[in-house]
Image 1: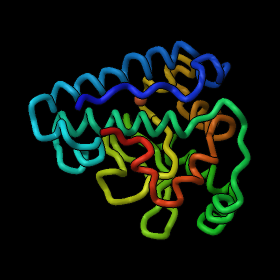
Image 2: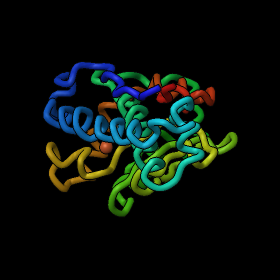
Image 3: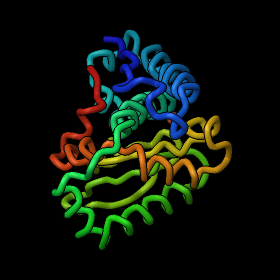
Length: 201
Ligand code: FE2
């Protein structure tokens, strides 16, 4: 079964200056869509057609891994964002405070990871066993391939921010982390079902 580009869970114009409609047109409509098309082309006529994205990511390498992981990472990323300011649910807040000392310190460390990641990739908050950790992966790599549970991600490929922030990745990271995260979605992923939320098939 072919994968489909998932619709955005909000209007492309709803983030104002934080993320422009033009960025969504390219990032979702062109980049994410291309990863879907290339994944479908690679799995056509193979056993992978019957599998979920996360099953393919675990089994594949090379071009199929890169495209399937980029489909999954982007689907998860859109779900992490919200044009409405959302309060952090109490359980998530207490888990972050226990792991990082305070919410401010969590944000400081997440921004440092996302800003400092060299070249293309993704910054993540993951759950490794029972521990919350901040990490990043290069290029298309994904927590799906590493046995850790994804809670939150920010795309730090230039295509995620260049139209709105040019080369100022720190401004993009700070703007989104402080103003555009769906903390309710992040909290839902504490139950360990985060991988399936962006899965298809
Ligand atoms: Fe991206």
